[in-house]
Length: 458
Image (cartoon, rainbow, N blue to C red; front, top):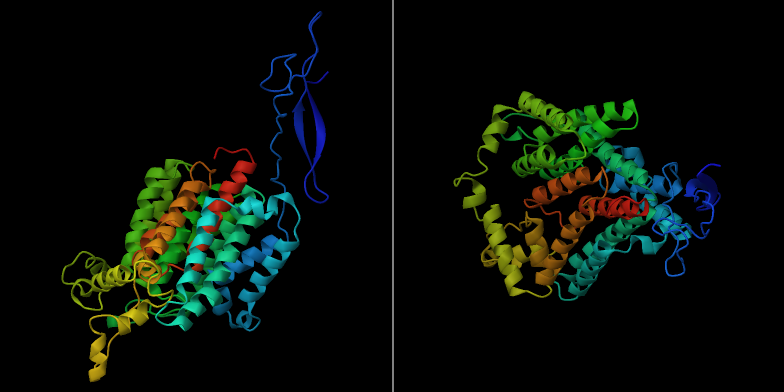
């Protein structure tokens, strides 16, 4: 008689999956026959322990309508695909995908997608951050600015981040959405390369693009590159691997055209992490993928590009000397935070503070123009606009997402590198409320959720 028997296990509507259930061998002569479960001696009472239930193998679950809509949301909110192709913008694809995803999730009754599966420390911290933003609205310098940022923008981002976490059923689902994130970045870069030209002089690099500027795009590209490395090695089909290889080339070309110094620092940080810590992929693959990016970068970067990168640490750079340079802006931003430590100046009001509270604001009464600068640092942005509590919550969300990725499967190092690329790049950009960040956070939390469900170490 076989030592295993097969019993059906129903999971979800109409899905029957099978796992082997251990059956004890026949008893020896004179031996007492009794319950025998893993972890119990023969004949030991099981009343004090619940039976061990094997993890359900869900790797066969395919794309469904909800996952397709979530993928569409990522392509539109992060990849801005509806702005790349005008015909998609006419049908308001971003709003349509988001609304459909929320509606489909609300009517989905399967256990893997219940709201409780998405509640964890990271999502609770993100909820607290949203609540603190709402509290900051009434006392904002310009209430209208804050109202638009919170209720016309960030609340949608927060809700969809939660839906992304709730929608994933398996590690395969997280892989699918991570591939969509990569594909969106590759398509964006390809369109930029074909529709924008570089000039001479000050036009040697890309300027304002679709939704993103060149610096934002560089951070987007860097955050997608680790996913390209992952699928180049772990893609389930040859077509996926070939796309990942071509995608790395396209992303690197777009990255070079961006001419972003902050992006260059982010890329260096990601490359170091990939080579030293990307343990899920053999070292030779990591080195090969990193070498591919490096070869494309060195082969296509102009002398002007390297001259620009050489000014990163220069004391003569405008970021060090000009009142509209980053260091001066950051210093003033810290001042706004110190003057408004609890609720800040209000979401979306950093530029208003520059035009009304900065030491240079009084020039306007004499007819002298004053630049209403963006914060150019996501941490300064949050601290100035939401005060110290808002800054603490923002840091806690990011730290919790990194923590969720610890020992969460083979995809974990890739998402860690992607999140690292975003954090380093956003240190020089105003991306505190961006869909890019909260999509990566959602993928991190979703991976932790399904890794635990599938019995992987967490």
